[in-house]
Picture (cartoon, rainbow, N blue to C red):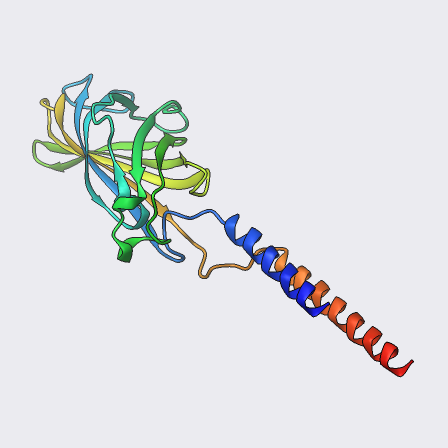
Length: 220
């Protein structure tokens, strides 16, 4: 009976353990993925309502599970409308990943052979253009996004994004910008599977019953 109980526990833990998807950030930490882009705008001095077309994507910095990210197509031309709300629905950046390329020290889980595609979709936007110095302005935008992942990662992943570009007033139709994606893992510790306490309580109850039955059999 005891062996059966132990076996059931092991099977349960194996099942629940394998069902836990990997986050892209360690508990209590933030993973980031930074790109440099080449931007073109519809106006010499970008303002609210204008569109930034972002192209020539290059990964310039990353951390944790994003260390395995790479661009299969760096020439994705994506239009970023400068405004607020959900006006950038449909902005979807495709990023490949390969976990075999992960440095062991930076990963959430042990490096593996998993490969796949991450789709970064903007769901909200706030944007502004602010004077920085005489003759220069900075364009800034930020918001939230979801990252649709393979079955190996949590899906969808909630993230924030930001974009900035410095330009000379009247000459801002082209220039280099920075696009940053951040994923914060607010969990402070690895949680137990939700059903585990109840399961262990049931196992304990079965053990008590089995022991009581054994004593009765010995007394008889």
